Amino acid sequence: MRVLVLSPHHTDFLWLRSLLDSDPEMDPDVTWCPDLIDCDDLIRNASFDVIVWDCAFHGGDEASFLQYLSVSSDEKPVLALSAESPGERAPALLAEGASDYLSRSSLDYWAFARAVRCLWYRQQLSASAQGHLGRELATGVINRDLFFDRLQQALLRAERGGQRLALLHLNLDDFRSINESFGYQKSDQMIMKLAERLRRALRRVDSLMRIGGDELAIIIEKVEDSLDITRIIRKVVSALDDPLTVDGQTLVVSASLGVATYPESGDNAENLMRRANRAMFEAKRDPGTSYRFYDRQLHITAGYQLRLEADLRNALRGGELEVYYQPRVDLATEEVRGVECLLRWNHPQRGLVGPDEFIPVAERSGLIVPIGYWVIEQACKRLQESAGLGFPGLVFAVNLSFRQFHDRKMTETIFRIIFNANVDTSLLELELTESAMMHDPEYAQRCLRELNQLGISFALDDFGTGFSSLSNLQHLPISLVKIDKSFVQELGHSADAEHIIRAIISLSHSLQMSVVAEGVETEGQLEFLRQSHCDEVQGYYYARPMPWNDLVQFLTSRGQSACLQK
Ligand code: C2E
Ligand code: CA
Ligand code: CA
Image (cartoon, rainbow, N blue to C red; front, side, top):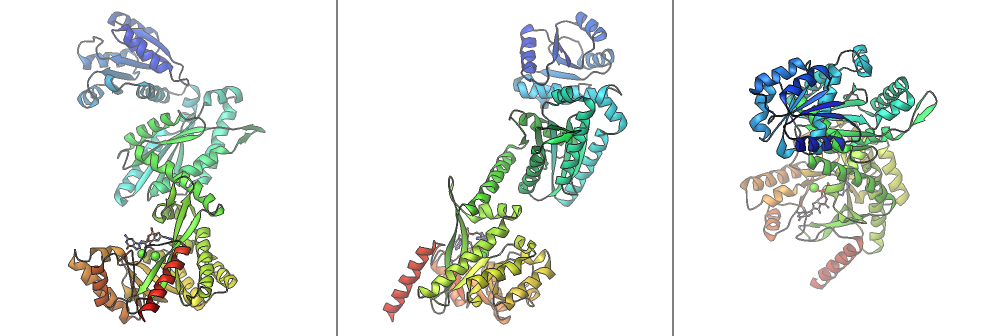
């Protein structure tokens, strides 16, 4: 890469050159030019790939100087530098023909090296049909315009559908030496192979294209949240980990991935490309295959989630998961009718992690399936024990996530678990939300019926937060409705909450379903629920979720006090 620096000060030139020199991959040849006369000569007779123009270099009127540079250099890209912020200067300079603009105050190695490299890259692309890149462009292997088009289309779709989108920019590390040792053709085959492998790892809606000699870009559409993106990145990274074989020669490659997401990192194709590119350069700092999100917060979350997922895999095997039990109290008799089984994770470093943090990760990774069965097993074991401890008839409620329905052997597996545990299935209750049944209603209904035939009953969890009406669920074997804690906690603050709770209770009763109110914390809430004929309550007012031994103690002491009262 040949760079011409137009700057009146030698110290500035040395500084800029040192910034470029710190990028080991660039190895640029940097020439200094302090005045106009030399400049003309240099530009016409030496060929530079990128021109760096410090606006303090006197060129008279800026617009005409830029025009002059463009004509005499045969349209080489010009990177303009000056003291003002980009907001103040960039629009005018870019309109006048500069290719990019950087403010001196924010000039560091990353910003500068990236900008120069980007320009150089663009320059190479447009530099006709010479060299590898040109050949690939000419043969249609690489088509940046087409990619740009696709990205723009995808962005439109995302915007219309209110969805997120992620752009992954993948650059192979040290491709130059791969090229040198394997030769151009083999390296090329290797990239094609890698692209093929990545394509298999991606979903059908994702599009992958080669946008440079050693660069691929992937558009990931229809993602709900950063977890989705994280999962896809994980697949890409693990696809890169396997060695590649071309003509009997094996090679291990690593790559740097930059990720920019819509809407967080930009809302047009150009910005997203630039930011994914920038993130990719940052990923280059880390050894081996690595990724970076342009958006820092997303980067932190993604890293956190990937680690959490890896840890969770070990947690089940390592016995770090534990079930807590929260009592459900019958309002008429004040007796504990049952308990809800709630997962906890004793993380070796982080301490006790709540389910809201790790259940989504477990769902997304499919780990919820084995974890879910483990919870049912625990519940059955405790159900067995509780009769011996003097609490027969205690109902054990277990939460079932919609992802567990994805396991086509669900009913069979649950049947095997309860058969092995030899428990009274009428004491086992499964809690599910409306959304769990909405994904594949027919299949879900079949599962519910099959399990119901085994004696298991069902509760509708978080009721009131979804959209379905109770009468729609009439034909399902649901015997209990749990009012979401958000309504209970609104009691005393909103008349709406009172009306809604009363309506749910009376409708449920008319459909022969019992009602449990969740999240009861105060005497006032309890009183309202009692007057509204709610059947049972669950909440901190009576007890928090607790380990099994504490529950046994809790039940024992309640039993004793009840005896004393009699
Ligand atoms: P959920 O099914 O709605 O469980 C009730 C949540 O409310 C529990 O949170 C419980 O600790 C909390 N809670 C109970 N009483 C009160 C109260 O008076 N005030 C307040 N503020 N909160 C109360 P937890 O244990 O953090 O569980 C959160 C969610 O994680 C559960 O919500 C459930 O959806 C999910 N979860 C827990 N265990 C499992 C499991 O084994 N499998 C699946 N699929 N999901 C689980
Ligand atoms: Ca629940
Ligand atoms: Ca709930």
